[in-house]
Image (cartoon, rainbow, N blue to C red; front, side):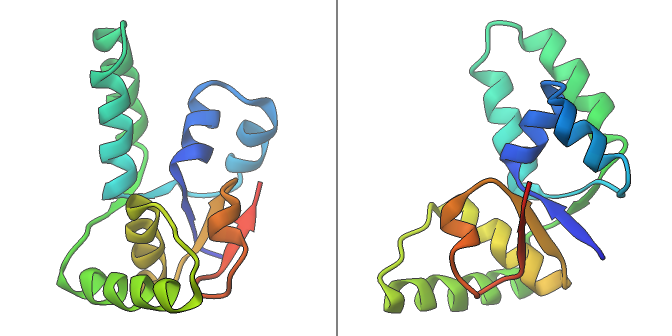
Length: 126
């Protein structure tokens, strides 16, 4: 089973959430470039930029980061349209993460109900 970890799972991991740390140890860590961007934004917005950037760099050196390319963009457009048709709004960054997962045949691990509650991508709740 190949997993793509959503930003909320990675934040919990970086905050040493014992349950997430225990579970994630069994998998290779893969994230979307969108998650990397969200983490970097959090660093920019923090009071401890230098320390947080050092931790981020150590963390991402262990990750596979899936890029957003034209193929992912096509899947994004399909997912976004399907969500619009269903009347199910989802934050833009989460649609990009969903598209990355779907294009690469990955399962999203998340705590976001708006990702978990539909069948457009395969997802797991942690």
